Image 1 (cartoon, one colour):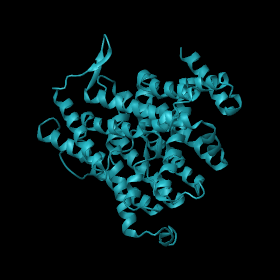
Image 2 (cartoon, one colour; image 1 turned 135 degrees about the horizontal axis):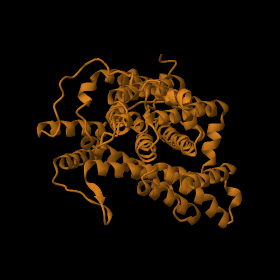
Image 3 (cartoon, rainbow, N blue to C red; image 1 turned 90 degrees about the vertical axis):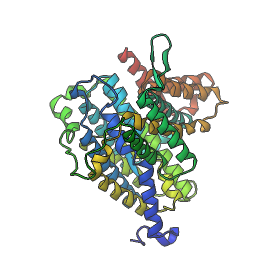
Image 4 (cartoon, rainbow, N blue to C red; image 1 turned 180 degrees about the vertical axis):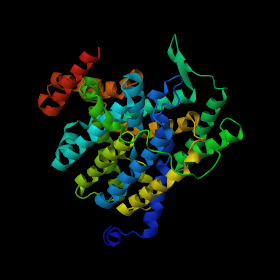
Length: 444
């Protein structure tokens, strides 16, 4: 085991790797609550049950997809990077695809499945790395930052801090409401934990907020602690149903944009996380990532696996940097994280106490972490600053990740052509320009 994971070469031990894997799990365990809450649209009242995914099934699918992705990353990629369904992609899946566009969640899962299969093909052929390189860095950073703002906006709305207004579109909510006060408490406690660099600050913020909610009577106390895992039956295989029952639903411009969005966002998330975490761990060699295709294979296989089980796109988590900071240097830490995700399935009753007011602070804080990409955009170059800005601002204002990406990717070739930099635009960007123009024509 030590030889396979190169313990001696990387100067690590079982203890350091276990602590690192545990730290990573604590830092990202909030997804076990946040993902089911998001995909079931728990915060949206009055929706028919047919439009909602089953909470327990999504919880199990989330844990198993995270376990599978982290295990593959650890054993095959040999990197201390854990995976789980992405927060931004889950929000896009639930609020843009299902709620706004009216696409059934079963069909949306098919979109995730298709994107995962495309990932696998692109990874094995090496095309995936080429496509990543074709997208300008500024737009990659803009997508991440835009999703961060979108997630923060959703968190503020779920907390009741921001509400709708007929005159100004949005306004400050009633801060005296019990659930809003609970969310504000959660924000303060999470900010304190994160500022003090407490490992797993977001997770512990959720735990403490839940406990306070139960003490003051805003949250019902759980009836137990450990019980058999919830059934996967409500979501298992649902991604395959549209393929056999209603294939016509798959050949639409809307679903094409959905699949492309899953592809693009996961491209950026995974590539950015791999570079950031491996740099932090000192694993980059000559500015290149060893075993890059193996690492990329982890999220593509986990995405297919997760889609069949019943969850949105699985991607690499930047919270893995917390595990690296705790000493993790090898894939063994990811194997530890994978094992902890499997064990978490049997503690489902404890997670039922989590409400939208409890998870709102996590959404807001994750948004803060994601908008750090703003600092990497060269705002002095107007030809890239404009499409980057439009990408970022359009996501929360249109309440759609896809719309933000489409607008930014349309304006980028235009500004580059006008500035006389036609040759600096990759041909793939011109193809995307045409695709997104068609998207808006058919959308209207």
